[in-house]
Structure formats: structure tokens, C-alpha cells
Length: 261
Ligand code: SF4
Figure 1: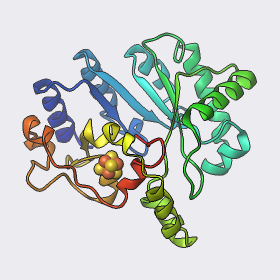
Figure 2: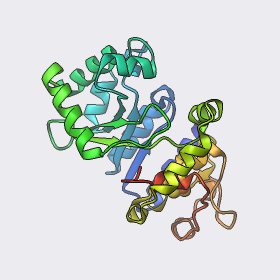
Figure 3: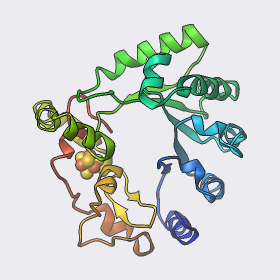
Figure 4: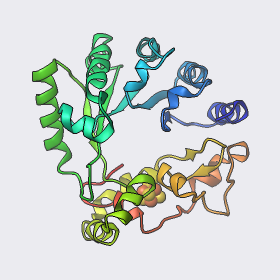
């Protein structure tokens, strides 16, 4: 995301009643303007959340990120695919688990997961063509295992079903599981999830300023409804708040089982 898009986003923030800025990407920390964006957003009284893969703290020049996040009470949502070394390293590569554990300990030492204004949440995605098990049960298991083995504490665990986009989509096609997986999520449709679908509570700004209903639609290249402004520089809060959400087959994943948003 370049300077002009960051500035346009900050302008929207100053003009509109938006409570939270949620920063995501492959690794949002690698954007050179990220810290400036966080400082300005936090100083304007908005909540800031960052989706972090934790291992980024060990990249050159990123060592002080935990202290920076702590200074501005940035909420951290961290991906940890498993509470065992084998499971995490199999999913994300060798060394992922040990770096993640060290990063979580560092965050705990700064008060993350302990004091109310420093929230630390973890994310779990299943590693295959199946839906996640109960979020509450898995959270209890993560808290027990990470607490007993490493003394780590955190606030909540979020479980997300895998969306058939990108590498997961390729895996489903390659393994011949696409049809079965989509049938599974459709059969698990739960109307009780509809009120909390993330597209009903947020708008996604792509790296080039294009507006999407959610980051899944961004991954699929589906911009917001054609009757709305489609770029952050043309943002119109009233029009976009009442927009028709662009949906497709993939939306069944968000509404399967306990929901994924
Ligand atoms: S994938 Fe569909 S249901 Fe899920 S957040 Fe995006 S638009 Fe909404």
C-alpha cells in the first residue's frame, strides 16, 4: 500500500465514525508506512488490530515491534496453527513453533493477554478439507497446553474455516476435494451466523485502494457492488454503509457451523 492510499485511508478515518482499523496482509509489518499509520490511528482514539504471524518479530529491523505495539495498545491477532511443535512446523515450516512461542512469551512480558488494554488473540485454521471443531473447546485446549508447557496466556482463540481461495483452493483441486468440501460447508449452513458475517461490519481496503466487502472477496478479485464508490479516494460512508454485499458460493464457508468471522 503506497503513501497516497495510506493518506486517503487516514482522511476517511478523520471524516467518518469508524471505530477500528484492522491491519492485515501477508505480513503488514513489512509495509514501510505501517508504524506511521498505527500512530496516527491510535492518536485519533481508534482501536488498532494487527494480524501478525509472530515470526516477523525475528526479521531484521523488526525486533522492537512488540514494544511498539505495546506502546500504542495495538490488539494482536496471531496465527498459531497448532499448540504442538510438530503440528505448527508441519503447517508453516521448520522453526515456526519455537519462534512463535518466544514471541508470545515476549508479548506476555509486556502485559499482552494479561492487562485489559493489551489484547492478544490467537487464530486456528484446520489443516485440511474439514471444518474446525468447537471454538470454545479448542480455546480451552490451547490455553491448557500453552499455559502448562510454556506459561503462555492469551485472551481468545478464533477458529476459521478455510476459504477455498489461493493455496487452499489449489490444494482442494489438486487433491480432488473441492466438490466434497463445498458440499460439507453447504450442509453445515447455520443461519445464526448471518448477523456476524464480517462483510456486514467492515469494509476492506486493498493494497491499491480498491474497496471490497471482505478480504476473501479481495483474494478473489471481487470489488464492492458496481453502484458504489470502488476506491478509497472516492469513499462515501452513507452509500457504502447501505451497499448490497457481493456474495458467491464461497460465502457458505463463512456461514458454516459456528461461523468464521
Ligand atoms: S466471503 Fe461472503 S459471507 Fe464471507 S465475509 Fe465475504 S462477502 Fe461476507
